[in-house]
Image (cartoon, rainbow, N blue to C red; front, side):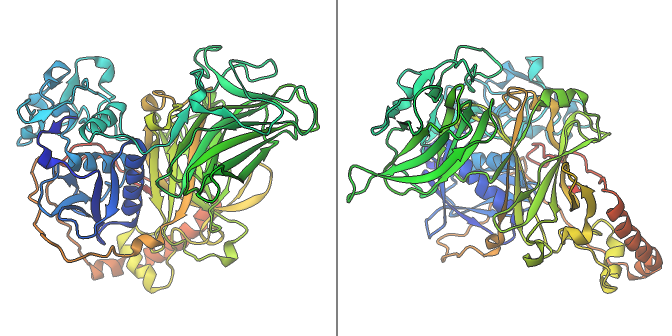
Length: 631
């Protein structure tokens, strides 16, 4: 990306915004998730508009577009239209607003890519303009094929031939990614806004100073920085599957000593800006069954200047012999340290407790992790069209859900993974509201980079709409069936609209229809970065109540309310025409009724495979993942 020159185009590091009521609920949730990523990885924050002279007005327009930089125009519009509600797309548009053009608009772009002018749609050539150094700057950062601001190879193509060809062929299928910020995107943004991150800490124990951690008082044993332990682990997690014997981790031995021996490992001091934090770390248990890892915080206040310990979570037992990922939610508002306490149990131990890759951030922890082991083998042997299911999980308010994953895609798209959300029957169904109202699922394939700030997770978010019907794709049938009371709601009680299936333990439950995308991630991107580590992949999953996003954001009297002049290189208007044909609908009455009862019967006998729309682009020419459709 390259930035527009001029301090007048900069926003304050806390950007005022309004989320307009025209936005879809799922889009609002994705926007708030994007704000969390900005806070995690940069010093940019966002706050609800409170009368500031300039602010970003986010609404549902006819596409995805934004002005470049702060135009000092009062109300500055940014559109997140239909099918724009993916994390990378939202990050992309806000980078425009913060002052960045596309990566291929750099003055030096011809050194890295070739623009195929004869393949560009007539009248769209201006989208490939570059900006010289009199109006833009690359901030001293090399050209980035992986930028979230780069066009794809077929942007504005007449047909399917490339409009952009990379000078290094290996990057032809890299350009155009819309997963997350790249490292270079973050470097430029942080340089432009002179950022010091709000992020708290990341520690991999590669340096002897162990990130400023200390051996706490009160224990009669110590944590040790080691490269391997005879009883396991044989390697750290940072370098797992890469170079054995080069990395370090912290280990508390319980192979010797007596029951009740303890050791304390305390972090450096932290000064939180928000009241909620997420502690993430990998833990390897090669000790006794009843050895225990306790997570504490030591909080410092005026009344307790030496600090007071508060227990957060106890971890014992669990899977042994492998590095396991843990997330622990903290709720600290004062100065504090994180304290890891190891406790030796009474059972025989061959080794002890180990820690690695600790990340502490002011973000929300995921509710669940789904780890698929031996994934490399599954990728090589699973046939296209074969579906793998996660365990069932319970949301905080009691909804049971499950993720369905096509590791090698659908039969007609075996080069990419497909993913779907299913509601399932659970213990609380009789006390829940149906159809399930406004619960947003986050399905996040974790980039297992040891530093959370440098991860490019692949995230897809879906929201349950209680008004969505199973006949939404049969327009003529829908109104007739509704009049007859035969409507099935897509997110209704799985016992009503689902299929009876057998779990791996032999128990039976109902699985509702799936909703998701056939283009979750391509295999080429899946094999890049650290999505697969130690032959495993990890999904971070949550299902949150977002009903509150229906509330309209209060708006103060506007100082200036100027209309956005939309640059035709960014977006164009579209119109939607609604047609009602009552006579034609009546002709299909008999067929509609028959189809409804057939669909109900079929759903209970087998799961449905949906049809999927092709990938599309809008005026800003960055690819969407395929439309979210039922499956």
